[in-house]
Structures are given as C-alpha cells and as structure tokens.
Image 1: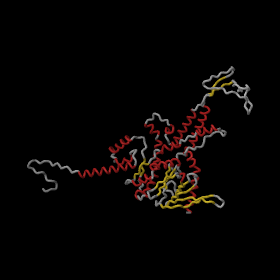
Image 2: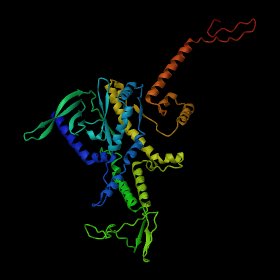
Image 3: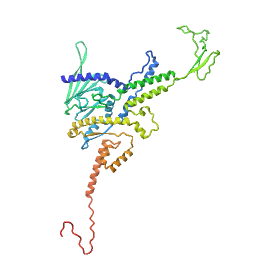
Length: 479
C-alpha cells in the first residue's frame, strides 16, 4: 500500500500541475471561455457588452474537420474473422464512443482507453486527459505504461471522491475518506475499496496521442491556436467598436445657437440644478426635417463614416492563418466556395487529407492494441498476439458509390484481384455488413456444390463406327 500511496500522491500532484499549466486553458478555450479583448480601464458598460459579443469560438470547427474523417468501421485480423473481438467493440457501443476518444486526443494532445475484464465481456473505458495521469518508463517507445491513476470527482462539488489504480498485475479501486484533525481541519485519506487481478501482464491503459515528439510530449490542435483566437477576438472587438460609433455619417452645424429651454408657464429659462447653466432645447433632426439658420455665418456639413474594409481584411487574414496552422481547408472556415472544380477542391483539401492519414496511422495502432487486449480478455490467445491485425477506417471521401464500384470492378477484371479482398473497402458498409457478405458467399458456394452433386453427368457421345467395323478398344483394355 505504501508504494501505491506514493504513486497515487505523485500522480495527483502531476495531474494538478498539468491542469493548472496547460489543460485548464485548453479546455476553457475549446468551450468558448476565451480571454477578453483589450479595452481601456475606464470602459463603460457598452464597451464591455461589445467585448462579450466579440468572442467567436472557431476551435470546434478546426477540430471537427479531421474528427469527422476518423471512424473505425471494422477489424481485420491476419487470419480468421475476429468476430468475437468485434462483438466486444459493438457491446461497448464504440461506434459512437470512439469519437470522444479521438476528440480528446485532438483537443488536449492525448486521451486514453482502459480495458477492464468483466464477466460479461471486456469493458472499453474512454478516459479524458483531465482525469488520468499515466507514467511511462520510456514515453516514446513503450506501448504500455508502468501504471496509471484515474480520478473521480463529485459532480456537484468537484471534490475528489475516488480513484482507480492500474498496473501490470491488478486494478485497484480507491476511495477517499474525509477526516477531521486535532485543530478542526479536514483532510482526506485514501483507502483501498477493492482489488481485481486482470491477467494481462501489462498495464491495460492505451494512449491515443495526436502528435508525439521524441520527448514524449503531445500537443493537440487547440493549444497552438490560442494566440490566433485572441487576435481574431481583438479584431472582432475593434470592428464592433468602429461599427457602433463610427460607421454612420455625422452631420454638423456651426455658428447656430440652439433655442433656450423656457418654462411654458413663467417664460423663464430653465437651468441645470447642479451647475446652474442654462438648458437648451434639442434640435429635432431626422431625414424628414429641414435645417435652416438666420445667421449668414452658420455652416452645415458632415463627417464621413469609418471604413470597415481594413477590419474585414484583417479578420480574413487571421482566419486564413488559423487554417494554415491547423491544416484546415480555408473554405471550411470562411465559406468562400464558389465555382470550384473537382481538382481545385481536392487540392484545397490535400493538407487535411494528409493530416487525417497520419492520424489514422497513429490512432489505428492504438485501437489495434486495445482490441488485442480485448482478445486476451476473451481468451483468444492467437488473436491477442496478432501484430498483423488492422482496423478498417471508413472511407469518407467525396467519391460516389458508382465511381468506387467501377474502379474496383476494373481491379477484379484487369488485375485479377479477388472480389472478397475489396469488400471491406467499399464505402458505406460496416464490418457487420462485410461479415454478412462472407456468410452469404459461403452459403451460396455450399448450395452450388450441393446442386452440382445432385446433377447427373451427361452421357458421353461415342462416334458411330462404319458398318462391319468394331470400335477401337479403350486404352489399357484387352487387345
């Protein structure tokens, strides 16, 4: 317990540090809680309202661009079907829940999935980077960590209520008991509530890292874009200020004194009760009225409105910078998509396509590790050591089913690729659909063999011999 307690305290300290230094700001910006734009210290309520309206959260759109292209559709072992493993995937509702794993890795740089053995089948537990600390001996090359600590907080108060400790031998459930000290201070002490050996031989927590460097650090999509978000919000604020106070023409008159404000009963000029200065009647001025003055020295004029073109160009430039840094197609954020050919659209999305391919390689290795652990929990020893097994990603390209079928048909006819090898590459079909294709094909082959066995062979056509001549004896017969 002493070793576990020391690791638990170290994990909590590191998790608090990571949250305070990085994760809290990343989470806040991704949820739209940005730092406000600069404004004068003596700003009034109107300025503050414009500052609130100036905050625009572009980050979910940047994350959604690759996220919507990351969908695991199947599992293909090197031999066999792997149906039991895919059933565990389906039982854990991972078709829907895999998205939160990918989103957490894209936002914070990393997320995790724990495999927990259970009597009803292995449980795949997605874990946010905000709720777990994972320790690696070598964070770059190690497939599994030394240990991991997952924390649980009260949904209302946010206080620490429990933890789950993973290592290479067992999974330990830990609860925190609140106690009162000698001087009335309160503190919590960890207590072991349950231990469960898992039998994996490794710590069953798998990391999903979006961009891992040689020091084991992983940076997501949000953190590099925080300064860009601040610039965009500042530009929006300046635009709103200029639009509110300077985007209208101002008409003026000089050399004309407004009429005094007099009391209708006494005829006396009214004065300001605080300063004693005389009050003037406001000049009624709207498009339906005409101004004139008796004094020939009176002059009328107007001040031009402030142009907003510079603010709009600056805003567009900042958004394009965000698109370049995040490898997001600019038309995803700006919407300026007009008369683009198929080749131009493919070129605009080439950077996103390359990024998605890289993420599929990284996340695919992690999902394969998760499914190998699930296979070991199911007792499938051969499948749990199958390093050639691969996950199948959904084809989210813009090609139609007719184009894909035509291309694959040519592969079958011209290159002699077996049709069954292309079934799991058809867009819009899941692993369950492909398994049904194999079942239908096996049933059709079985019926074809049965029909062929029942069909009698046609009689051989023996050529007629000339009259008086005997047919030649069969080969190997009597001479």
